[in-house]
Image 1 (tube, rainbow, N blue to C red):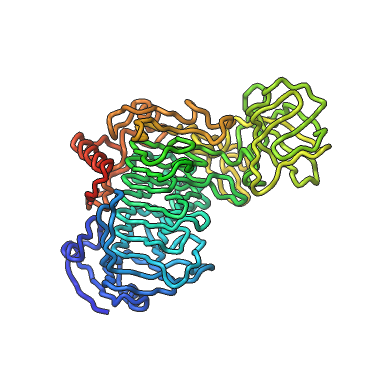
Image 2: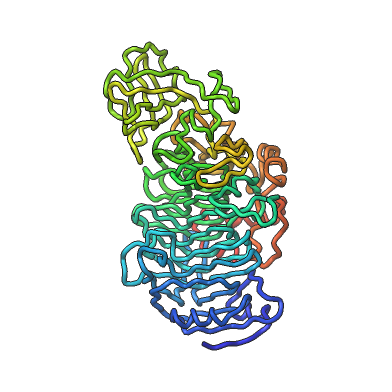
Length: 603
């Protein structure tokens, strides 16, 4: 281990252009490791906040996890050029081979967990490559970022994830925000749910909470405004994602996740996340902005580019290339709890009876708190039918009168007891419902009893936002002191300027099922089309997302490049329009990307 000293401003520059990293204002110590796991660990042990640990050029095999709890820079010699384009190239000089354990708590390479929101951490210039093991790591990725408190000073940049045997690359969790930029992700895919990022802001504390407040399960994030246009997100920008072997996803979300995905190139992958749908008390993804990206799929018949299961989002100024999708939309919405894909969630199935949803209590499309869900119809199946159909020969229903309602099995002792799903059609004597066939099976055998109810607004649905603060397990609404409706705020999703370039076609939002009871077009989501000036905010968006709904008035996207990339001070949480000069630069970059240019973006 070799130590050198220097004033932090020129020391950072001398180590390869460490722009955008703020360390101590006096002197930084630089520790030069020999690249071995033991040497890097020793250097980190000796380092203090603001110091730098270098990893030299070479190939190193690591077999155990490294935990970092200091605000340091960890720098290798790998460089990435052309990030954010299809022509991104990595010069793999510092290579760490992943032979960490598969299974158990140690299934990662780096974990950086900052003890306060003021600690600055940076990982830069490292290539992560496969080791001798070809068993896929199935937990949360080789690089993990977390913080106590809301930390906006953590950065991962100029790293190359080179076909590692991990189902995820980077896990962003707890109170970690900041940025991941100028990285190249070459991912295997085909390993059972491969995603670049897992994002989970479970301990985020909502603005205005009492000092010392703690939160779990994403409840604080859901009790807060979306804060579009501010820094209350993790920024995933100017990266290149190349998936092979059937594709994958660039994101997976849970626990109130907040992220911005911008200025990236994505090949053969989707943007997606989980909703509030599991058996535990965790909440789904909260809010995201997807803009100025290029999505390319090489073959026809691929899934949609985005799939969202909860919360609110903006998609705009993205370009789509490659083959036409079988379901050609920028993003599709799926409210999983409205079927039984996740059987028996702690929140109940959203079939018009869960206490967490706004249900039709009066039989006329009205919800009155404290009133029981209205029972529209009931009976018993007269014939055993295949999954997806209910038959009751005693009825004389009007065709499609129950379309958009929900049916549930109420036979005590049945394997389908209290499973429900929403109705897509009915005849005079049969009902068709969405057949999820996921964690359970909703089957109506002869003699099984059923009820029909209607859900109006599902908790944490797509197009839903801020709620009452929920806490505990089992969950309790802190406003009412019981398990009860959390007063969901409508925060519509907006799509504009999303273009499939081969045909100059506008792409927008759609729901997975055409008859989804909630998440309605022009109420919960809006497709504004194309033709707006590039990287501008339509008046429909700015007039809706005022300070009352957003926390601050939304007038434009957050500063690009991110302040940690440019070295600029972090702005206060307010959105400001971009300058005309910046818009012109962005237009030039887009044109180069469409023509396959390999120029660096944002470096």
